[in-house]
Image (cartoon, rainbow, N blue to C red):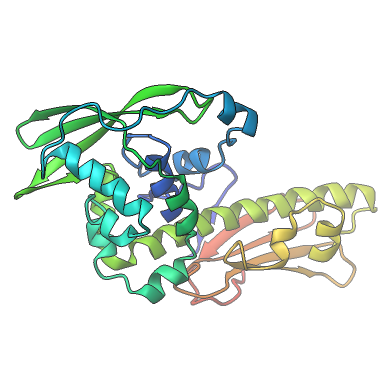
Amino acid sequence: MIKRLHHGSFRVSSAALPFLVVFALFVNGCGTAVSSDPSAARSKADANPLTAADTAAAPALPAGPSIDIKANSPADTVKVFYERLRANQFIDALKLTNLRPAVEGLTPEDVKDLGVDFSEVASSVPPQMPINGEIVSGNEATVTMKMPNEKDGKIETNEIRLRKEGDVWIMLIADPDGERVVRKQGRNYFFYLRMEVHHREAQAMLERINKAQGIYALQNEGRFADLETLTGKGYVPADALSAESTGYNYKIALAFDKSTYTAHATPAIYGKTGTLSFASRIRKGKDPELVSKDVKGKNLQN
């Protein structure tokens, strides 16, 4: 069955942050659990970074922990997590979180295929962890740290929640909805995340193409254009010409007289960069309608 997607109605369900942003949240001192809402993920990922001037003006971090950290305590778990990140031991670091089911089965090839720039994360981890508080209540705990906020770099206290499982404490990166997805997907979780993001972006790209065609047609007596023409004029991002960054191949099929067109988006590698194929067709006198369906990576005919 074809799923029809109208502008503004598409919503990716049960996804969390892309792999790199998971780390960035903690490198930047954000203790809020990863949400299952991908729009929140995008806002985090697209936030403007601090400028060099902002960084230079920001207060210096404390030299290290200001509390006594006991072995195997919640604060110790947070400390070891950051130490492993800094040492490029990313899989071992995530095993200290509730994303553990997603990393236990990953092979080195899987990690490479996910395309994560781990070295950038490692270089961003402060050499000392400014942990300044620990509150334990039964099997739940909160560890506080003084870290720069994402907006202006000012030092503020951030909270990291933990849960005790058996004899160990784990950091709660994923929220309850996200954690359920992690358990369901297992080692496929990060590939699943990536595909969910690509699906959302593929729809957005086709909507961008539709708007660009509308502008072009107004300027060219109702005739539409191919993808190369639209990107050349700056109406559509050049990313649409390659699947390298988008995970999708885009194509515009024009009618002989260029009075109608169909725009296609198909996954570059079915099952890894996406599973849905998208199509948007314009008919004379009607608005474009976007449809999607899993057709094993082939062009979708709407």
